[in-house]
Image (cartoon, rainbow, N blue to C red):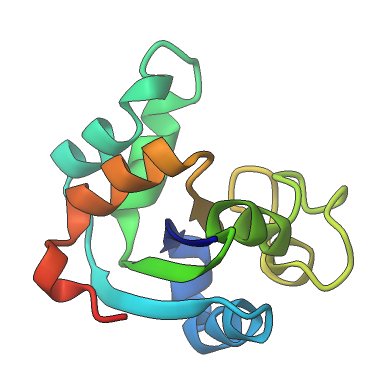
Length: 139
């Protein structure tokens, strides 16, 4: 079933000019990038996006990290896009990520793991709506 999922290419990857390389892995896995833009997250945007982690000890550091430099927000489309992109991203810890995954190739650490992807269809819809309107997504 064709689905849409949300992706962020994080500051550690944009700082190293890896947007094109990450996109090549995404597209090589059969996912289409149907919306994309480079933005600088505000503190309010980052806090809202990561509010599920607000009580965790790493929340403040995560917000600071995500607002430090530009990110690339994306909508990806394809068969079983949520699960497909999570597989392409690889494990959060790059040392445990499978060969060929984005995190194995590009992540610097567990914290600087280069990409975010939605963990469910429901969250994909919520996350996409935070950054894109329907008319900005062209499939």
